[in-house]
Length: 78
Image (cartoon, rainbow, N blue to C red; front, side, top):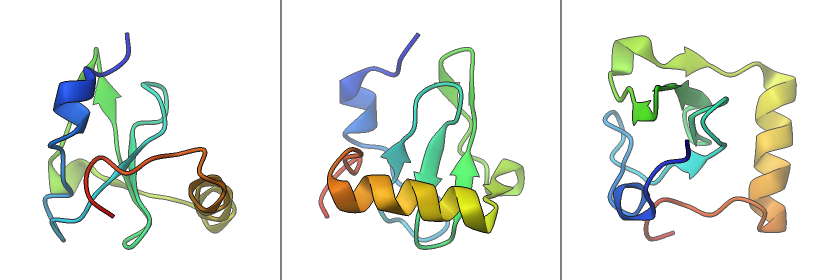
């Protein structure tokens, strides 16, 4: 189950209030500025700062490359 596009359009990082990048339900929502990832459980994004996972450098570099190539779009703005 993927997230509703209307929900994605309004999601922001609860820490820095910036846009996130949806990686799919398996991987969650990524914040490239903080290199943190918010999980998605049963189709519901868990937007609690304490539950965010720090992304390993290699994974962050891969996600950042996908963002730079236009493969991933921000949840809003940017």
